[in-house]
Image 1: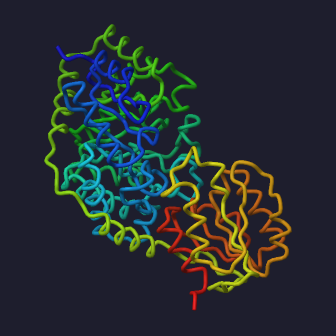
Image 2: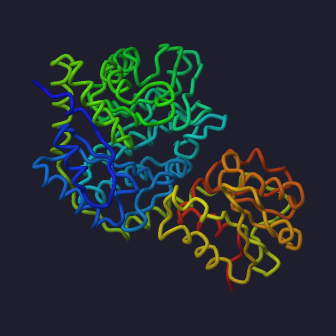
Image 3: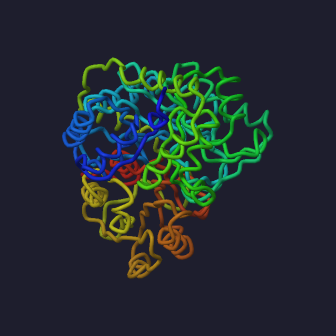
Length: 487
């Protein structure tokens, strides 16, 4: 008889396996562990964490990580920080997508990581999507399908399971599921033609896992996709003919917790046909969920099938480890191809290196606990100062709206280069962009580093460059395009 506890993937706490973590996995029999930034200091420490946890449990675990590149990066150093999907979408080359997947796998597998919760296959739309944005390959479903399938093959050819997400596609959502439940109201035929295309290609490429989304799609079912037999069974298993692992997104996200207790949500997930149920943050919810499923029971045939799919992924053959230097070259190549001049305004490029040029950077100190930056939150500013010697510098707030001396500095400058870190989301960035748009648009070059959708907030007289990412390689590629070369 298969224990329902086997179907769980838990997020854990700490840089070493604690007694509490070991006890949790022993008592529940959970199959998977999700590594988050709170578990990662260095690759060597991560490898030691995985090895010790598996050794103390006496069994292998389905060790997973969100290693998308771009927005979603858990390592501060020691692995290649790729620009992300939007940059690959700009490059339009499946060979590069394959190479990224391969490099990622060859860096992750030696650490004991068996699954990467990537690629994101959500197709972008014209509407601002706060949960996806530049995590998407872009608005072209055919291109997203080609790039996604190539990424999957590259990763799995090198020994790490890929996980395509977020099925059936939440690119058209306008609410972030981390906060609340989105609803996408599109006709079924149009939705299938656009948003299902990348998943169809990933399934055809043999992707090991597919993650569902916390989104309601009335055209398919009144139930949230996470709890929908029609979406998991009829569409994914039936229409797409998929027989791999089906994983839920984290059941601690606001889209779920604002409506259902975590334990109840896991039961609904299992009923919908999931093989792996993910709980990333709620320790009490983890034990409650396993207890509830053990009490409620589930069809042995379903549990056995899930167990077999899990077991198959625990024994993938790994490829040789990669060289970081090769990853760095690949990353820089993609970042350079991603930079585009989104709007030709009054400020001509390149901007001279001069004390009269003001470089306005996001104040990353305000979000240092929320986002990962290579080398720490000071990395982007150190890079900018190296690339712009002799220029004046200022910081714009991110989470707060107090602009301080920025209005006076911008007024005194002859030229302004503003790095915009998603002004539609963050009030400090919105306030800074509004100030520059109102008083200095004709002398400002805006560089979009986290959201291409900030373009709509920039007046026509403002020059706009879109970097499609804020990893250091993306910042260097964008600033190299915007700033004059040093003599």
